[in-house]
Image (cartoon, rainbow, N blue to C red; front, side):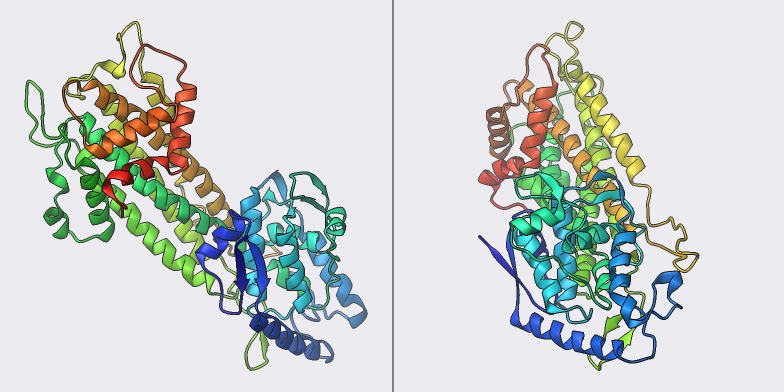
Length: 512
């Protein structure tokens, strides 16, 4: 099994994906263990002094003014975990929780948090055992970190609360730890706080969304090319010299992908109409501009994610010179903004795909295709309601594009009076990514049927490869009305699993 070694300088996106989705094992580097030990010595020295230090010998948040005596500090750390594990609602996905825990471990190993090495090792042991704390949908405001989600994870380290075992059974965490020979952690000064104070949940979901969207933007270029063929559009607008004079990188990449898919097509540019077209509709002609803008948004979000992956997010932090200082680095605004920005781009990409689908189904705009791509229009409804489903998905995506980060609701007796709502931005982006996949699946379904209905005209070799692969995957072609939901589900799986892009790339080579 692949192993990810966590050091003091952060982790990569591929590390996160390997642990969250691939079940990779986690090890602490010797450098990390040494840094953990050195920072802990600083915390213990401060804890022995009579002067109050936030997070070490004081309460938290609005209660930070109370000095806590030594005999109550272990109880204080236990209490913050128990009281902050106040999430409600459905459980979040296993991959999200694994990403959350791994990214918190990344910050612990930076040597800036002051926890003992055994705390970090226990977190690694839990990940390696396949034990996943039960974390709930609601509870994070994205400021002071993803407090409730991280608290539920910390509760598992203490052997309390519920967790899911490697076989998928949810049981008391103490039982699962005992079965795997893991001793619960008894928290000391600062350790409870250090386990809770990070942007790890929203960052983990951002990293996974970026991976998913990298595939979906390639998929959208392929479905747009197929729709262009189905509509007998022109590929002249994809010429590199046209995109060179407006040099947005994403736009050029999308145009190049579409052109690669369409190479050798016998369908482009025919314009078999009573009134020849001078130009294609915007949803066809401007596909690279819209998808390209989204690609550039992905690039910006990736820069933010990389910076955050290299960060140590905690409050207070142990600095190299031995100071322990309070800060505001736990605020989720940098991550929340790009999560919301991505949701906007996703909604627009889905919207333009739906417009192409609708054009394929409308006999007044499809340039010779039968109404709704039906076998016997009137007797058959064809793909009429598939487009309804697509439209419903797009409508929801527009609602999901409303930014969470523009909201703030004060908490903790107005001490935490401006919050990022980054966790909420991440949760709605996950839904948006799922819905975009379904929207592209419907476009794929309609476009492949439209191409097949263009009798006597041969599609591009890459398009034919996609059609052959999607039919082999159980998505049926033209014919009389049938139960559509299984076809749409198969198309969704074909896009989601990367088979669409893989089929095209067998002809085109790697797409950008």
